Image 1 (cartoon, rainbow, N blue to C red):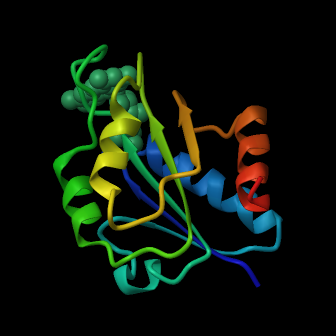
Image 2 (image 1 turned 30 degrees about the horizontal axis):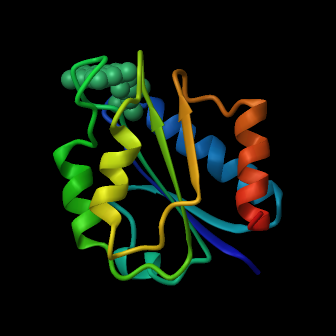
Amino acid sequence: MTTAAVVYRSRTGTTRRYAEEIGAHLRAHGIDVTVGSIGDCDMAALGDVDLLLLGCWTNGLLVIAQHPDQPWVAFARDLPRVRGRVGLFTTYRLATGSMFGRMKAELRGRAPEPALELKSRDGRLSTGDRAALDRFVAGT
Ligand SMILES: Cc1cc2nc3c(=O)[nH]c(=O)nc-3n(C[C@H](O)[C@H](O)[C@H](O)COP(=O)(O)O)c2cc1C
């Protein structure tokens, strides 16, 4: 059975909702999924899952200088070496700008280059998000 972990950092709940919707979509594909926040996931297990989805709210100056917040950066630096396929997600209000680039920079050398980027303003999984997730799962 394919395994997946969806790990999020959320301040006010929007990114948590997005993570839960991502998890539910993967589960509907018969994937064995765990969803948890950066503070309460099993770090060692993240190295072994087939699919690892990492999310953080967009922190910045609204239109410039977007970056994951300090707790997410600390989490990324503590990750074990990841062997599975990696996807990223974020929630935002105006623009994600440099967010994905900054997340990727933190993961470089620890994990394969992310093959998926999902973003949402309201934490709901769109039709396009579902199609992108399906391609990610299929590895295409
Ligand atoms: C301090 C702060 C900085 C933010 N910076 C940005 C930003 O640069 N660009 C943007 O689109 N949204 C920005 N936002 C909006 C949040 O990214 C957005 O509300 C997000 O969905 C919050 O996720 P959460 O509910 O999981 O904490 C900012 C919010 C806060 C509180």
